[in-house]
Image (cartoon, rainbow, N blue to C red; front, side, top):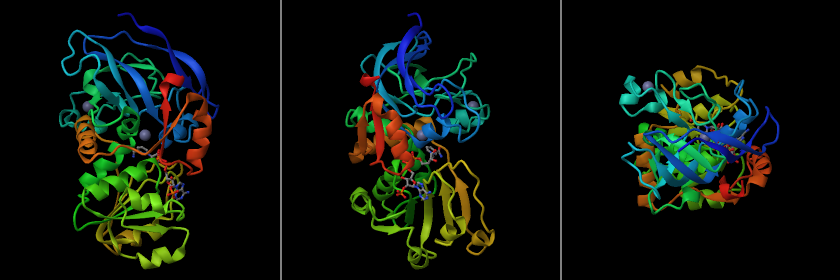
Length: 349
Ligand code: NAP
Ligand code: ZN
Ligand code: ZN
């Protein structure tokens, strides 16, 4: 097949500019590639950080989207894992070096030579990458995952980032029976974190700015729900948690949160604020506490997470939108007004 030259997409033409309809090119399907007919793309807060250059200089035009779910519509001559008609997903990266220690261990997110980001990156030929707010994607079969039949493609799309980004640290820090886990922020990542931590057997507390989403939090599997706007929360919960997973997109008053950890507890950031945080080291020293971070997850663990969701019968909670609503959805995400992931129906692009 020759390259696809006029694939409909939604792009930010410049930093902070509204996204608008455009077309992009996709490379020809190579021997190891699959062509994906994209059906749904989730809106991650990282799309907004990048489209507005909140994390630093970015590449424009930008087609965001790294929560991609679709159907294989063509396979290269050497493809062995997928066939036309298979349901597949693509997350935050579309390639890596495949040779370094981390790639060989299935921890591609730590590739020593850098992963190729699904968008706002450059592929091995030096061409800019474009993400999931489009109708088709060509990707090496080794960087796609299988979406189990039990999961709808719409509710599966957000699992490709929000799902794996929360599942991976919960597994790494051993959320499970006997562990008290707090999830800070009930947004796209947070609502998945609550579900996973609950299904893994932990006692789960949501720390949200207010109580307005309390019913949802409890329904998703939380045992307790507190408002961080109430100072009493921080006295009542002092030295309580083994693990705190922060999904918050802005800096937090770290000392107040660190004091909620028990001795040897860990505060793990998956939220990626645009501004630095500061803390008093005594907040760590006093309880031999750990402050950590975690990025997305590798291909194998992403597949494990999808299979876990299928087995336990849940995907993301979504608000399905048309492409015309993307800019409005961005504003609502920033206002913490999403229940709990916007997903674009790409047939409207
Ligand atoms: P989101 O849907 O906007 O959720 C963030 C939640 O944080 C909000 O719903 C809100 O929950 C809470 N929050 C927002 N502003 C706050 C503030 N000023 N103080 C306290 N709480 C606040 O975003 P998301 O898509 O889940 O992404 C969350 C963050 O994770 C973003 O920074 C994103 O870039 C990052 N991220 C990181 C990775 C990674 O690999 N580490 C992967 C994906 C995303 P409440 O209303 O409940 O308070
Ligand atoms: Zn993301
Ligand atoms: Zn590598």
